[in-house]
Image (cartoon, rainbow, N blue to C red; front, side):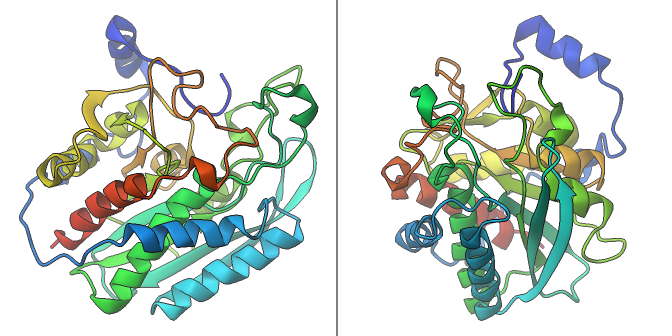
Length: 333
């Protein structure tokens, strides 16, 4: 297994769920109301989100230790601040599985930091240093643009930050752009470096939160949410730790007419940032990530290839995901 999906179906799904050792927050999702009560929700602008994706991609590959990475990080922090967030940059030297020291930067924008009622929204902003899934073997050491795998989730959250700056929700929100997510084991390595070679920035934050004792009602991770024709199933780890949050989101999607995107069925398991937020930070967190049971890589045919560029981004997908998450946040009390 590499970074993301392996399929859990039928009896195996049930066996895995029963045999896994209980996490610290297992069962916390029962406290999350799935009731949908409509309030005045500002309109999510899909074109604005698209432009936010493009502006990131225009920097080039955002690989840690590169000039593009530094420039894009400064841009993201300035945009959050421009929209009224209190911005914290969490710098850390993180060792990749290759031994390389990564100059990583987690960027957190807090809206209403004094509000004790909080929700965490996150996406990774770095891009893969290697196109190790590209059909051309000569490209397997070439960095990718990561338009969908990275920039899409950040683009949606930047548009939400713009909305928060215009109309504050009833709760405090922390938007976190995590770094060094995609520096995990190369697909052509002889041995797999393990799960902890991924999501380095999130692992660091979970052990060293930007606010001592930080907590949130729940978290929502966005990953690869801008593809051309994705479907989002209820991911396995999300179901295990935050089933009620999953149900809240999928109920809202159905209410808003986005059931063609948000398939109300269990999907596979994803090794992604939410795993470490759940297991280390003890915050019930879900992952909105595409899943295609018949696809080559289960989630995005352009994953970790040089084709993950702006031609891979559909504003309609950004709009669907953005509208659903925006409505969930503004319906919180």
